[in-house]
Image 1: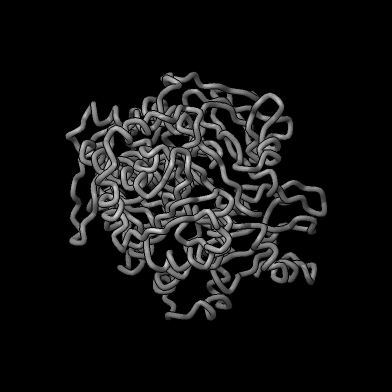
Image 2 (image 1 turned 90 degrees about the vertical axis):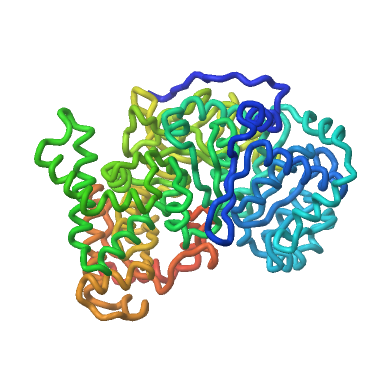
Length: 605
Protein backbone atom coordinates (compact mmCIF):
# COMPACT_ATOMS: atom_id res chain seq x y z
CA UNK A 1 0.00 0.00 0.00
CA UNK A 2 1.35 3.45 -0.90
CA UNK A 3 -1.45 5.83 0.18
CA UNK A 4 -3.93 5.97 3.07
CA UNK A 5 -6.42 8.58 4.33
CA UNK A 6 -8.42 8.78 7.57
CA UNK A 7 -11.69 10.73 7.27
CA UNK A 8 -12.12 13.85 9.39
CA UNK A 9 -14.51 13.52 12.34
CA UNK A 10 -15.20 17.23 12.87
CA UNK A 11 -15.48 20.12 10.42
CA UNK A 12 -14.64 23.61 11.71
CA UNK A 13 -16.24 26.86 10.55
CA UNK A 14 -13.51 28.75 8.57
CA UNK A 15 -14.49 31.96 10.38
CA UNK A 16 -13.39 30.53 13.73
CA UNK A 17 -10.01 30.91 15.42
CA UNK A 18 -8.28 29.68 18.56
CA UNK A 19 -9.99 32.29 20.71
CA UNK A 20 -13.28 30.57 19.87
CA UNK A 21 -11.81 27.23 20.99
CA UNK A 22 -11.09 28.62 24.45
CA UNK A 23 -14.47 30.38 24.54
CA UNK A 24 -16.18 27.03 23.95
CA UNK A 25 -14.32 25.52 26.92
CA UNK A 26 -15.41 28.42 29.12
CA UNK A 27 -19.01 28.06 27.95
CA UNK A 28 -19.04 24.30 28.49
CA UNK A 29 -17.25 24.10 31.85
CA UNK A 30 -16.18 27.57 32.88
CA UNK A 31 -16.09 26.95 36.62
CA UNK A 32 -14.19 23.67 36.39
CA UNK A 33 -10.36 23.56 36.41
CA UNK A 34 -8.47 24.17 33.18
CA UNK A 35 -5.00 24.43 34.69
CA UNK A 36 -3.18 23.86 37.95
CA UNK A 37 -0.25 25.96 39.15
CA UNK A 38 2.52 24.52 41.27
CA UNK A 39 3.17 26.63 44.35
CA UNK A 40 6.53 27.03 46.07
CA UNK A 41 5.28 24.66 48.77
CA UNK A 42 4.93 21.95 46.13
CA UNK A 43 1.13 21.89 46.26
CA UNK A 44 -1.04 22.46 43.18
CA UNK A 45 -3.67 25.24 42.94
CA UNK A 46 -6.56 25.01 40.47
CA UNK A 47 -7.34 27.74 37.94
CA UNK A 48 -10.80 27.45 36.40
CA UNK A 49 -11.41 27.98 32.70
CA UNK A 50 -13.27 31.21 33.50
CA UNK A 51 -10.45 32.50 35.72
CA UNK A 52 -7.86 31.68 33.07
CA UNK A 53 -9.95 33.38 30.38
CA UNK A 54 -10.19 36.51 32.52
CA UNK A 55 -6.42 36.53 33.02
CA UNK A 56 -5.91 36.12 29.27
CA UNK A 57 -8.08 39.19 28.67
CA UNK A 58 -6.13 41.25 31.21
CA UNK A 59 -2.73 40.34 29.72
CA UNK A 60 -4.02 40.88 26.17
CA UNK A 61 -5.07 44.40 27.16
CA UNK A 62 -1.54 45.01 28.41
CA UNK A 63 -0.10 43.95 25.07
CA UNK A 64 -2.46 46.33 23.30
CA UNK A 65 -1.50 49.16 25.66
CA UNK A 66 2.19 48.57 24.86
CA UNK A 67 1.53 49.02 21.16
CA UNK A 68 1.07 45.45 19.90
CA UNK A 69 -1.03 45.72 16.74
CA UNK A 70 -3.06 42.97 15.05
CA UNK A 71 -0.67 40.71 13.15
CA UNK A 72 2.42 41.84 15.10
CA UNK A 73 4.91 39.18 16.15
CA UNK A 74 5.40 38.76 19.91
CA UNK A 75 8.15 36.52 21.27
CA UNK A 76 8.27 34.29 24.36
CA UNK A 77 11.62 33.02 25.70
CA UNK A 78 11.00 30.94 28.79
CA UNK A 79 10.99 27.49 30.28
CA UNK A 80 7.69 25.64 30.43
CA UNK A 81 5.52 27.31 33.07
CA UNK A 82 1.98 28.57 33.62
CA UNK A 83 2.88 32.07 32.40
CA UNK A 84 3.95 30.67 29.02
CA UNK A 85 0.46 29.32 28.36
CA UNK A 86 -1.11 32.51 29.65
CA UNK A 87 1.00 34.68 27.35
CA UNK A 88 0.39 32.49 24.30
CA UNK A 89 -3.38 32.72 24.63
CA UNK A 90 -3.15 36.45 25.42
CA UNK A 91 -1.12 37.09 22.26
CA UNK A 92 -3.84 35.37 20.21
CA UNK A 93 -6.51 37.33 22.09
CA UNK A 94 -4.74 40.54 21.10
CA UNK A 95 -4.82 39.45 17.44
CA UNK A 96 -1.05 38.94 17.30
CA UNK A 97 1.29 36.06 16.38
CA UNK A 98 3.45 34.14 18.88
CA UNK A 99 7.12 33.48 18.15
CA UNK A 100 8.66 31.06 20.68
CA UNK A 101 12.38 31.00 21.45
CA UNK A 102 14.12 28.23 23.39
CA UNK A 103 15.43 29.47 26.71
CA UNK A 104 18.70 27.70 25.89
CA UNK A 105 19.21 29.73 22.71
CA UNK A 106 22.52 31.50 22.12
CA UNK A 107 22.73 35.21 21.33
CA UNK A 108 23.29 34.39 17.65
CA UNK A 109 20.20 32.16 17.54
CA UNK A 110 18.12 34.79 19.34
CA UNK A 111 19.31 37.48 16.95
CA UNK A 112 18.40 35.39 13.92
CA UNK A 113 14.85 34.60 15.11
CA UNK A 114 14.14 38.13 16.35
CA UNK A 115 15.29 39.64 13.06
CA UNK A 116 13.87 37.02 10.70
CA UNK A 117 10.46 37.10 12.39
CA UNK A 118 10.57 40.86 13.04
CA UNK A 119 9.56 40.41 16.69
CA UNK A 120 8.22 43.68 18.14
CA UNK A 121 7.78 42.77 21.81
CA UNK A 122 9.53 39.98 23.72
CA UNK A 123 8.77 38.40 27.09
CA UNK A 124 11.65 36.48 28.68
CA UNK A 125 11.73 34.47 31.89
CA UNK A 126 14.90 35.59 33.67
CA UNK A 127 17.44 38.39 33.81
CA UNK A 128 19.94 35.98 32.20
CA UNK A 129 17.61 35.61 29.22
CA UNK A 130 17.30 39.39 29.07
CA UNK A 131 21.09 39.67 28.96
CA UNK A 132 21.24 37.21 26.07
CA UNK A 133 18.65 39.26 24.21
CA UNK A 134 20.54 42.48 24.91
CA UNK A 135 23.62 40.98 23.26
CA UNK A 136 21.53 40.22 20.18
CA UNK A 137 19.47 43.38 20.04
CA UNK A 138 21.58 45.31 17.54
CA UNK A 139 20.59 42.76 14.91
CA UNK A 140 16.88 43.11 15.71
CA UNK A 141 15.99 46.78 15.14
CA UNK A 142 12.26 46.07 15.16
CA UNK A 143 12.28 44.93 18.81
CA UNK A 144 10.69 47.70 20.86
CA UNK A 145 10.63 46.28 24.38
CA UNK A 146 11.69 43.30 26.51
CA UNK A 147 9.81 42.21 29.66
CA UNK A 148 10.96 39.70 32.25
CA UNK A 149 8.55 37.29 33.96
CA UNK A 150 10.67 36.92 37.09
CA UNK A 151 10.73 40.71 37.42
CA UNK A 152 6.93 41.02 37.34
CA UNK A 153 6.20 41.20 33.60
CA UNK A 154 2.71 39.72 33.94
CA UNK A 155 1.67 42.21 36.63
CA UNK A 156 3.16 45.03 34.53
CA UNK A 157 1.11 43.97 31.53
CA UNK A 158 -2.09 43.74 33.56
CA UNK A 159 -1.49 47.20 35.05
CA UNK A 160 -0.67 48.70 31.65
CA UNK A 161 -3.87 47.35 30.14
CA UNK A 162 -6.25 48.63 32.80
CA UNK A 163 -7.40 51.49 30.56
CA UNK A 164 -7.92 49.40 27.41
CA UNK A 165 -11.69 48.95 26.82
CA UNK A 166 -13.28 45.51 26.66
CA UNK A 167 -14.62 46.37 23.22
CA UNK A 168 -11.11 46.50 21.74
CA UNK A 169 -10.34 42.96 22.92
CA UNK A 170 -13.71 41.74 21.64
CA UNK A 171 -12.86 43.25 18.26
CA UNK A 172 -9.38 41.76 18.13
CA UNK A 173 -10.29 38.27 19.27
CA UNK A 174 -12.41 37.75 16.15
CA UNK A 175 -10.02 39.20 13.55
CA UNK A 176 -8.22 35.99 12.59
CA UNK A 177 -9.67 33.15 10.54
CA UNK A 178 -8.49 29.58 10.25
CA UNK A 179 -6.09 30.50 7.43
CA UNK A 180 -4.31 33.20 9.43
CA UNK A 181 -0.94 32.59 11.09
CA UNK A 182 -1.09 31.86 14.82
CA UNK A 183 2.59 31.19 15.45
CA UNK A 184 5.97 30.94 13.74
CA UNK A 185 7.95 28.02 15.17
CA UNK A 186 11.59 27.83 14.20
CA UNK A 187 12.77 24.30 13.52
CA UNK A 188 15.26 23.26 16.17
CA UNK A 189 17.47 22.27 13.27
CA UNK A 190 19.72 19.23 13.23
CA UNK A 191 21.28 20.88 10.17
CA UNK A 192 21.61 24.44 8.92
CA UNK A 193 19.97 27.67 10.06
CA UNK A 194 16.47 27.26 11.54
CA UNK A 195 13.53 27.99 9.26
CA UNK A 196 10.35 29.56 10.63
CA UNK A 197 7.32 27.32 10.04
CA UNK A 198 4.13 29.37 9.84
CA UNK A 199 1.35 27.48 11.62
CA UNK A 200 -2.19 28.78 11.35
CA UNK A 201 -5.16 28.96 13.70
CA UNK A 202 -6.68 26.23 11.55
CA UNK A 203 -3.65 23.97 11.89
CA UNK A 204 -4.10 23.90 15.68
CA UNK A 205 -7.90 24.16 15.83
CA UNK A 206 -8.81 21.47 13.30
CA UNK A 207 -6.03 19.13 14.48
CA UNK A 208 -6.84 19.33 18.19
CA UNK A 209 -10.63 18.94 17.90
CA UNK A 210 -10.23 15.92 15.61
CA UNK A 211 -7.46 14.43 17.76
CA UNK A 212 -9.60 14.91 20.86
CA UNK A 213 -12.44 13.00 19.24
CA UNK A 214 -10.25 10.35 17.62
CA UNK A 215 -8.38 9.64 20.86
CA UNK A 216 -11.32 9.77 23.25
CA UNK A 217 -10.20 6.64 25.10
CA UNK A 218 -6.89 8.34 25.92
CA UNK A 219 -7.89 11.96 26.46
CA UNK A 220 -11.28 11.43 28.11
CA UNK A 221 -10.19 8.59 30.41
CA UNK A 222 -10.55 8.97 34.16
CA UNK A 223 -9.45 12.27 35.65
CA UNK A 224 -8.38 13.96 32.37
CA UNK A 225 -5.12 15.42 33.61
CA UNK A 226 -1.75 15.81 31.95
CA UNK A 227 1.56 17.28 33.04
CA UNK A 228 3.53 19.26 30.48
CA UNK A 229 7.30 19.08 30.92
CA UNK A 230 8.63 19.50 27.39
CA UNK A 231 9.74 23.00 26.28
CA UNK A 232 6.78 25.02 25.04
CA UNK A 233 8.99 26.41 22.29
CA UNK A 234 8.69 22.92 20.74
CA UNK A 235 5.69 22.18 18.53
CA UNK A 236 4.75 18.98 20.42
CA UNK A 237 4.32 20.89 23.68
CA UNK A 238 2.39 23.68 21.94
CA UNK A 239 0.05 21.07 20.48
CA UNK A 240 -0.54 19.66 23.96
CA UNK A 241 -1.30 23.01 25.55
CA UNK A 242 -3.95 23.66 22.89
CA UNK A 243 -5.24 20.06 22.88
CA UNK A 244 -6.24 20.16 26.56
CA UNK A 245 -8.81 22.86 25.78
CA UNK A 246 -11.16 20.80 23.53
CA UNK A 247 -10.22 17.60 25.39
CA UNK A 248 -11.63 18.96 28.66
CA UNK A 249 -8.34 18.22 30.42
CA UNK A 250 -6.52 19.91 33.28
CA UNK A 251 -2.97 21.03 32.41
CA UNK A 252 -0.03 21.32 34.76
CA UNK A 253 3.44 22.65 33.96
CA UNK A 254 6.87 21.69 35.25
CA UNK A 255 10.05 23.13 33.76
CA UNK A 256 12.57 20.77 35.28
CA UNK A 257 12.84 17.10 34.32
CA UNK A 258 15.14 16.65 37.34
CA UNK A 259 12.01 16.83 39.53
CA UNK A 260 9.78 15.04 37.04
CA UNK A 261 9.04 11.93 39.10
CA UNK A 262 8.25 14.09 42.12
CA UNK A 263 5.91 16.28 40.06
CA UNK A 264 4.23 13.27 38.44
CA UNK A 265 3.55 11.87 41.90
CA UNK A 266 2.11 15.18 43.08
CA UNK A 267 0.07 16.09 40.00
CA UNK A 268 -1.11 12.52 39.25
CA UNK A 269 -1.82 12.80 35.50
CA UNK A 270 -4.14 10.37 33.75
CA UNK A 271 -2.15 10.58 30.50
CA UNK A 272 1.24 11.94 29.54
CA UNK A 273 2.83 13.02 26.26
CA UNK A 274 6.57 13.04 25.86
CA UNK A 275 9.63 12.32 23.75
CA UNK A 276 11.28 8.86 23.87
CA UNK A 277 14.36 10.02 25.75
CA UNK A 278 12.20 10.77 28.82
CA UNK A 279 10.74 7.24 28.77
CA UNK A 280 14.28 5.91 28.41
CA UNK A 281 15.46 8.01 31.37
CA UNK A 282 12.60 6.78 33.59
CA UNK A 283 13.57 3.20 32.75
CA UNK A 284 17.28 3.79 33.37
CA UNK A 285 16.75 5.71 36.63
CA UNK A 286 14.47 2.94 37.90
CA UNK A 287 17.13 0.35 37.06
CA UNK A 288 19.79 2.45 38.77
CA UNK A 289 17.63 2.83 41.89
CA UNK A 290 17.14 -0.94 41.97
CA UNK A 291 20.89 -1.43 41.61
CA UNK A 292 21.59 0.92 44.50
CA UNK A 293 19.25 -1.17 46.64
CA UNK A 294 20.84 -4.42 45.60
CA UNK A 295 17.78 -5.46 43.58
CA UNK A 296 19.00 -5.00 40.03
CA UNK A 297 18.57 -8.71 39.18
CA UNK A 298 14.94 -8.57 40.31
CA UNK A 299 14.37 -5.40 38.27
CA UNK A 300 15.84 -6.91 35.12
CA UNK A 301 13.84 -10.10 35.59
CA UNK A 302 10.66 -8.03 36.01
CA UNK A 303 11.54 -5.91 32.96
CA UNK A 304 12.15 -8.95 30.75
CA UNK A 305 8.91 -10.46 32.05
CA UNK A 306 7.00 -7.26 31.18
CA UNK A 307 8.44 -7.27 27.66
CA UNK A 308 7.69 -10.97 27.14
CA UNK A 309 4.16 -10.48 28.46
CA UNK A 310 3.53 -7.55 26.11
CA UNK A 311 4.87 -9.44 23.11
CA UNK A 312 2.63 -12.39 23.96
CA UNK A 313 -0.40 -10.06 23.91
CA UNK A 314 0.14 -9.72 20.15
CA UNK A 315 0.27 -13.47 19.61
CA UNK A 316 -2.66 -15.78 18.98
CA UNK A 317 -3.94 -17.06 22.32
CA UNK A 318 -2.10 -14.38 24.30
CA UNK A 319 0.16 -15.03 27.30
CA UNK A 320 0.14 -18.55 28.72
CA UNK A 321 -0.65 -19.40 32.34
CA UNK A 322 3.02 -19.58 33.37
CA UNK A 323 3.79 -16.18 31.84
CA UNK A 324 0.69 -14.67 33.44
CA UNK A 325 1.82 -15.94 36.83
CA UNK A 326 5.34 -14.55 36.30
CA UNK A 327 3.88 -11.22 35.24
CA UNK A 328 1.63 -11.07 38.30
CA UNK A 329 4.64 -11.62 40.58
CA UNK A 330 6.70 -9.06 38.65
CA UNK A 331 3.86 -6.59 39.09
CA UNK A 332 3.88 -7.05 42.86
CA UNK A 333 7.66 -6.79 43.15
CA UNK A 334 8.51 -4.07 40.62
CA UNK A 335 5.98 -3.02 37.98
CA UNK A 336 3.32 -1.70 40.34
CA UNK A 337 5.91 0.53 41.99
CA UNK A 338 6.78 1.99 38.59
CA UNK A 339 3.13 2.90 38.00
CA UNK A 340 3.07 4.58 41.40
CA UNK A 341 6.23 6.54 40.52
CA UNK A 342 4.43 7.90 37.44
CA UNK A 343 1.61 9.21 39.61
CA UNK A 344 -0.47 6.08 40.01
CA UNK A 345 -3.22 7.07 37.57
CA UNK A 346 -1.51 7.04 34.17
CA UNK A 347 -3.04 4.58 31.74
CA UNK A 348 -1.89 6.00 28.41
CA UNK A 349 1.16 7.85 27.17
CA UNK A 350 1.81 9.25 23.72
CA UNK A 351 5.41 9.29 22.53
CA UNK A 352 6.57 11.43 19.65
CA UNK A 353 9.46 13.51 18.37
CA UNK A 354 11.72 10.51 17.64
CA UNK A 355 11.55 6.73 17.40
CA UNK A 356 10.54 5.05 20.65
CA UNK A 357 11.64 1.55 19.73
CA UNK A 358 9.86 -1.75 20.25
CA UNK A 359 11.74 -2.62 23.45
CA UNK A 360 10.45 0.40 25.40
CA UNK A 361 6.98 0.10 23.88
CA UNK A 362 6.66 -3.50 25.07
CA UNK A 363 8.24 -2.72 28.46
CA UNK A 364 5.76 0.04 29.32
CA UNK A 365 2.79 -1.93 28.04
CA UNK A 366 3.95 -4.79 30.23
CA UNK A 367 4.04 -2.35 33.16
CA UNK A 368 0.41 -1.47 32.47
CA UNK A 369 0.97 1.82 30.68
CA UNK A 370 -0.04 1.82 27.03
CA UNK A 371 2.54 3.91 25.17
CA UNK A 372 1.07 4.99 21.85
CA UNK A 373 3.85 5.97 19.51
CA UNK A 374 3.08 8.75 17.08
CA UNK A 375 4.82 10.72 14.38
CA UNK A 376 4.92 14.30 13.24
CA UNK A 377 7.07 17.33 12.53
CA UNK A 378 7.10 21.05 13.23
CA UNK A 379 5.59 21.53 9.78
CA UNK A 380 2.62 19.28 10.65
CA UNK A 381 1.75 21.00 13.96
CA UNK A 382 3.21 17.94 15.72
CA UNK A 383 1.23 14.70 15.24
CA UNK A 384 0.15 13.40 11.86
CA UNK A 385 -0.36 9.79 12.93
CA UNK A 386 -0.59 7.88 16.20
CA UNK A 387 -1.37 4.38 17.40
CA UNK A 388 -4.84 3.72 18.75
CA UNK A 389 -5.64 2.13 22.13
CA UNK A 390 -7.87 -0.50 20.56
CA UNK A 391 -5.31 -1.46 17.96
CA UNK A 392 -1.77 -0.48 18.80
CA UNK A 393 0.96 -1.97 16.66
CA UNK A 394 4.22 -1.58 18.53
CA UNK A 395 6.99 -0.64 16.12
CA UNK A 396 4.67 1.53 14.02
CA UNK A 397 3.53 5.12 14.52
CA UNK A 398 -0.09 4.25 13.81
CA UNK A 399 -2.53 5.36 11.10
CA UNK A 400 -3.14 8.99 10.09
CA UNK A 401 -5.17 11.05 12.54
CA UNK A 402 -8.69 12.02 11.40
CA UNK A 403 -8.54 14.26 8.33
CA UNK A 404 -4.95 13.34 7.46
CA UNK A 405 -3.42 11.46 4.54
CA UNK A 406 -0.09 9.74 3.97
CA UNK A 407 1.54 8.69 0.72
CA UNK A 408 4.81 6.95 -0.08
CA UNK A 409 7.05 7.92 -2.96
CA UNK A 410 8.80 5.26 -5.03
CA UNK A 411 11.94 5.69 -2.90
CA UNK A 412 9.93 5.28 0.31
CA UNK A 413 9.81 8.98 1.26
CA UNK A 414 6.76 9.82 3.38
CA UNK A 415 4.47 12.54 2.02
CA UNK A 416 1.68 14.12 4.10
CA UNK A 417 -1.46 16.08 3.41
CA UNK A 418 -4.19 17.52 5.62
CA UNK A 419 -5.38 20.57 7.59
CA UNK A 420 -2.45 20.15 10.00
CA UNK A 421 0.22 20.85 7.37
CA UNK A 422 1.84 24.28 7.73
CA UNK A 423 1.34 27.22 5.40
CA UNK A 424 5.02 27.61 4.51
CA UNK A 425 8.37 28.90 5.77
CA UNK A 426 8.36 32.52 6.89
CA UNK A 427 9.97 34.77 4.28
CA UNK A 428 11.41 31.79 2.43
CA UNK A 429 9.38 30.97 -0.68
CA UNK A 430 12.19 28.86 -2.18
CA UNK A 431 12.29 26.49 0.82
CA UNK A 432 8.49 26.39 0.87
CA UNK A 433 8.34 25.38 -2.80
CA UNK A 434 10.94 22.66 -2.23
CA UNK A 435 8.94 21.27 0.69
CA UNK A 436 5.87 20.41 -1.43
CA UNK A 437 5.17 18.26 -4.46
CA UNK A 438 3.43 19.72 -7.49
CA UNK A 439 0.10 18.33 -6.25
CA UNK A 440 0.43 19.75 -2.73
CA UNK A 441 1.88 16.93 -0.62
CA UNK A 442 4.43 17.85 2.04
CA UNK A 443 7.81 16.13 1.74
CA UNK A 444 8.91 14.91 5.18
CA UNK A 445 12.37 13.66 4.28
CA UNK A 446 11.62 10.49 6.28
CA UNK A 447 11.27 7.04 4.75
CA UNK A 448 8.87 4.32 5.78
CA UNK A 449 6.26 1.76 4.85
CA UNK A 450 2.48 1.38 5.15
CA UNK A 451 0.52 -1.75 5.99
CA UNK A 452 -2.98 -2.60 4.74
CA UNK A 453 -4.61 -0.79 7.68
CA UNK A 454 -2.68 2.42 7.10
CA UNK A 455 -0.24 1.93 9.97
CA UNK A 456 2.97 3.76 9.20
CA UNK A 457 6.40 2.43 10.08
CA UNK A 458 9.36 4.83 10.05
CA UNK A 459 12.51 3.16 8.80
CA UNK A 460 14.89 6.10 8.66
CA UNK A 461 15.67 9.63 7.65
CA UNK A 462 16.25 10.02 3.91
CA UNK A 463 19.31 12.22 4.43
CA UNK A 464 20.68 9.90 7.12
CA UNK A 465 20.75 6.73 5.07
CA UNK A 466 24.30 5.43 5.12
CA UNK A 467 25.70 3.92 1.93
CA UNK A 468 28.80 1.85 2.66
CA UNK A 469 31.72 1.47 0.29
CA UNK A 470 30.21 -1.88 -0.68
CA UNK A 471 26.96 -0.18 -1.75
CA UNK A 472 24.86 -1.38 1.21
CA UNK A 473 22.11 1.05 2.31
CA UNK A 474 21.85 1.18 6.10
CA UNK A 475 19.22 3.04 8.18
CA UNK A 476 21.05 3.91 11.43
CA UNK A 477 17.95 4.38 13.63
CA UNK A 478 17.35 0.68 14.30
CA UNK A 479 20.88 0.09 15.57
CA UNK A 480 21.00 3.35 17.53
CA UNK A 481 17.74 2.66 19.34
CA UNK A 482 18.76 -0.86 20.35
CA UNK A 483 22.21 0.15 21.56
CA UNK A 484 20.77 3.06 23.57
CA UNK A 485 18.87 0.46 25.61
CA UNK A 486 22.15 -0.43 27.33
CA UNK A 487 22.13 1.16 30.81
CA UNK A 488 25.58 2.67 30.30
CA UNK A 489 24.80 4.23 26.91
CA UNK A 490 23.45 7.75 26.56
CA UNK A 491 23.74 8.50 22.84
CA UNK A 492 24.77 6.63 19.71
CA UNK A 493 25.68 7.87 16.24
CA UNK A 494 26.10 5.09 13.69
CA UNK A 495 28.62 5.92 10.95
CA UNK A 496 29.95 4.26 7.81
CA UNK A 497 29.07 6.39 4.81
CA UNK A 498 31.48 5.39 2.00
CA UNK A 499 33.38 3.28 4.50
CA UNK A 500 34.11 -0.47 4.35
CA UNK A 501 31.86 -1.31 7.34
CA UNK A 502 29.42 0.16 9.85
CA UNK A 503 30.76 1.58 13.13
CA UNK A 504 29.42 3.70 15.98
CA UNK A 505 30.30 6.67 18.18
CA UNK A 506 28.98 6.09 21.70
CA UNK A 507 28.64 8.36 24.76
CA UNK A 508 28.30 7.09 28.33
CA UNK A 509 25.38 7.96 30.61
CA UNK A 510 27.10 9.55 33.63
CA UNK A 511 23.90 9.34 35.69
CA UNK A 512 23.66 5.59 35.25
CA UNK A 513 27.37 4.87 35.62
CA UNK A 514 27.55 4.79 39.47
CA UNK A 515 24.64 2.35 39.74
CA UNK A 516 26.05 0.09 37.05
CA UNK A 517 29.48 0.00 38.70
CA UNK A 518 27.96 -0.80 42.09
CA UNK A 519 25.75 -3.58 40.73
CA UNK A 520 28.79 -5.15 39.04
CA UNK A 521 30.91 -5.05 42.18
CA UNK A 522 33.22 -2.37 40.87
CA UNK A 523 34.53 0.68 42.72
CA UNK A 524 33.44 4.21 41.87
CA UNK A 525 35.38 5.75 39.02
CA UNK A 526 35.47 8.89 36.93
CA UNK A 527 34.12 9.10 33.40
CA UNK A 528 37.69 9.19 32.11
CA UNK A 529 38.48 5.94 33.94
CA UNK A 530 35.26 4.30 32.72
CA UNK A 531 36.11 5.05 29.10
CA UNK A 532 39.06 2.66 29.24
CA UNK A 533 37.76 0.16 31.81
CA UNK A 534 37.82 -3.39 30.45
CA UNK A 535 34.49 -4.40 32.02
CA UNK A 536 32.73 -1.29 30.71
CA UNK A 537 34.05 -1.89 27.21
CA UNK A 538 33.13 -5.58 27.35
CA UNK A 539 29.58 -4.78 28.50
CA UNK A 540 29.03 -2.23 25.75
CA UNK A 541 30.47 -4.65 23.22
CA UNK A 542 27.84 -7.16 24.36
CA UNK A 543 25.22 -4.44 23.81
CA UNK A 544 26.54 -3.95 20.29
CA UNK A 545 26.19 -7.66 19.62
CA UNK A 546 22.58 -7.59 20.85
CA UNK A 547 21.81 -4.59 18.61
CA UNK A 548 23.37 -6.39 15.64
CA UNK A 549 20.83 -9.20 15.92
CA UNK A 550 18.24 -6.87 14.39
CA UNK A 551 20.15 -6.43 11.12
CA UNK A 552 22.10 -8.34 8.52
CA UNK A 553 25.83 -8.93 8.77
CA UNK A 554 26.50 -6.19 6.21
CA UNK A 555 24.49 -3.70 8.29
CA UNK A 556 25.98 -4.64 11.68
CA UNK A 557 28.25 -2.49 13.84
CA UNK A 558 31.76 -3.91 13.59
CA UNK A 559 33.54 -1.36 15.76
CA UNK A 560 32.71 1.38 18.25
CA UNK A 561 34.44 4.27 19.98
CA UNK A 562 33.57 5.85 23.33
CA UNK A 563 33.61 9.64 23.22
CA UNK A 564 34.98 11.66 26.17
CA UNK A 565 31.76 13.62 26.79
CA UNK A 566 28.02 13.29 26.27
CA UNK A 567 25.84 15.09 23.72
CA UNK A 568 23.64 17.68 25.44
CA UNK A 569 21.46 20.65 24.59
CA UNK A 570 23.94 22.85 26.46
CA UNK A 571 26.94 21.84 24.34
CA UNK A 572 24.94 22.10 21.13
CA UNK A 573 24.91 18.46 20.04
CA UNK A 574 21.25 17.85 20.94
CA UNK A 575 18.27 19.84 19.77
CA UNK A 576 15.89 21.04 22.51
CA UNK A 577 13.70 18.04 21.61
CA UNK A 578 16.72 15.81 22.41
CA UNK A 579 17.56 14.75 18.86
CA UNK A 580 21.23 14.32 18.01
CA UNK A 581 22.57 16.88 15.53
CA UNK A 582 24.15 14.16 13.44
CA UNK A 583 25.79 16.42 10.87
CA UNK A 584 27.47 18.51 13.58
CA UNK A 585 28.70 15.39 15.39
CA UNK A 586 30.17 14.01 12.18
CA UNK A 587 32.05 17.27 11.56
CA UNK A 588 33.33 17.84 15.09
CA UNK A 589 34.23 14.20 15.73
CA UNK A 590 35.64 13.49 12.29
CA UNK A 591 38.96 12.41 13.85
CA UNK A 592 37.17 9.83 16.00
CA UNK A 593 35.34 8.49 12.94
CA UNK A 594 38.52 8.24 10.89
CA UNK A 595 40.30 6.49 13.78
CA UNK A 596 37.68 3.73 13.66
CA UNK A 597 38.81 2.87 10.13
CA UNK A 598 42.50 3.73 10.41
CA UNK A 599 43.85 0.17 10.65
CA UNK A 600 41.18 -1.48 8.53
CA UNK A 601 40.28 -3.95 11.28
CA UNK A 602 36.74 -4.76 12.36
CA UNK A 603 37.36 -5.78 15.97
CA UNK A 604 35.26 -4.07 18.66
CA UNK A 605 36.79 -1.79 21.24
